[in-house]
Amino acid sequence: MSSDTRPVTTRTSERGAATRGALLEAAKQVFVASGFAEAGVTEVVARANASVGSLYHHFSGGKAELYTALFDEFQDRQIQRSKRATQAARAAGVTDPMELLIAGARAYLEGCFEERELSALFLRGDGPPGFEVYMRERLGEWVRRNAALFDEDEGALAVVITGALAAVAQHVSLSEDVAAARRLADEALVIIRGIRRPGRPADEPPADPAARPA
Image: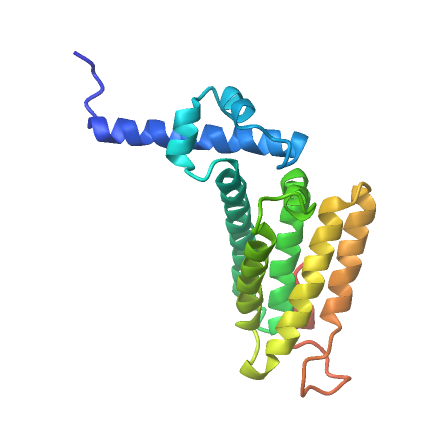
């Protein structure tokens, strides 16, 4: 009799999660190497050591759903990176909304550097039908998260800054010169930090200049 006394449903769930993870990792490798349009389901399942049936069990929408799932997981990691950085800045005593946004934005951009191949995959325009619309919807979530840092009358500021950060993220992800991309990202954050918030005097300094995140 097996010494493994865990319920069968638990072991089955763990195997299912492992298969799903293997399929996502294999899909990432295939998409990065071939692009979405040229990627084949058979190559994905072969790399994952799985079956076509198991792929459609976990991702009924096939490779389009695999692609979207990869994007969602990447965005979730990006959100967590930004959230942790913002929380750390608050814990360090930072209260100025712009400085909190910069802390989160720096972490987001660092995520683009850490996962450049995956980030670039989603920005090349070679995704499933309707993906660009879905990506814009997720960008809207980013806008709302940034807007929550500012006063209610500063929504336009959050939209402008988030749009600028999205452009920087695209450059960081697609640039072949990583060192130059890092310099541009740093310079862009300096420019964003200098944007005057609506209703504030032009010469008003940041609220916490000594507590700016590195």
